[in-house]
Length: 91
Image (cartoon, rainbow, N blue to C red):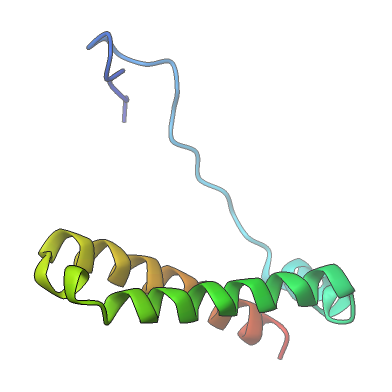
């Protein structure tokens, strides 16, 4: 699949790449990261971002705007998936 450059309208040299994920290797990496202070800070940061998105979804402006609501719902879903993925890999 080719990508079209937005500014030139010509085909871009960029290509979408697909990466295979070795689940055993990912589990080992997550288990090694569990006790790392920086990793724990990252998890706290993502949880705070999740809470902030939930707060934003409850504001009047977002409720009135379908596009904003849709965008923030997608953001919340991606954060949830990321946190679930990290939690499930560690088990």
